[in-house]
Length: 120
Image 1 (spheres, rainbow, N blue to C red):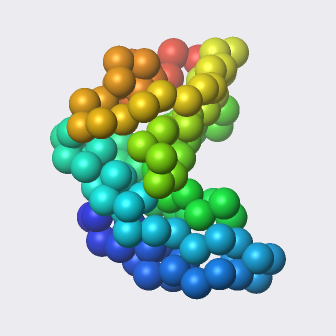
Image 2: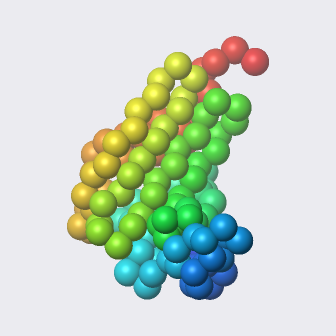
Image 3: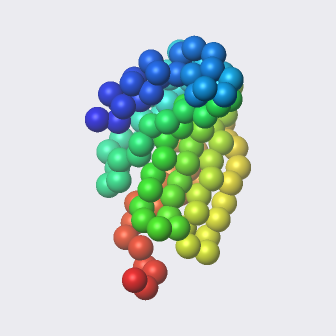
């Protein structure tokens, strides 16, 4: 389950230098934010993977095949940074999350979870 994976990532990234290169530790506040986000979006056709970034952010990533991915990054600030690549379509930015998933994030999750229309 994604919640278990998230807990594992969190426990592995709690100390400074967790990545071997001076990565900042992840925080309880970021973990709570990601878990609130997961509850808010509910079930998805593609389950994201959990990760962490050297700045101490926790991440969720959807990978839907070559050239199709969505990454969300959660820091303590309640700001979600996002980047999506879906063939020729690309978008990135930052939005606030306060319990309700912003429309642009919902649309990006739907986009990345739908079957590819690109030729094989």
